[in-house]
Length: 145
Image 1 (tube, rainbow, N blue to C red):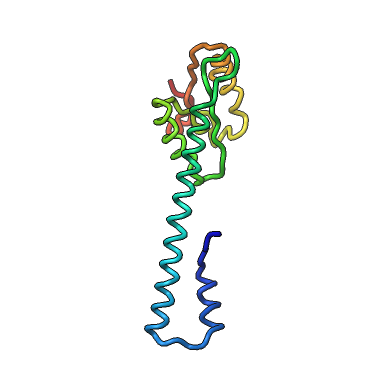
Image 2: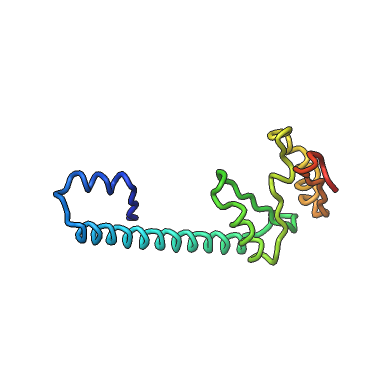
């Protein structure tokens, strides 16, 4: 079980306990910080171990019958670490190319970009052909290359 400390928990404990001397209060705060840091290190270690097991499973996976290319999709909310994980995974897979949703979607077309992904990337790869696609350039607000 992981310990998660929040400011409200610390305030509740202060309100509910008898007054502490300044040195005792500092010692109690120091203990909480040590516990928090230890929980954070444990959480990071567990995350690294989880990522390693995911990478190992992907490395061991076979491409679908008749295909020479493995396609891996990484999904998650903003800020979840998808790009970082994709970079790590790419390195472990011999610098495999990374396609980003940002290369297809735009503010003007946030949802209807998938036909280009299908036609320019997924269909050619499913036939063991080279895939080439037009990257969306966010600066010029149009397709590049």
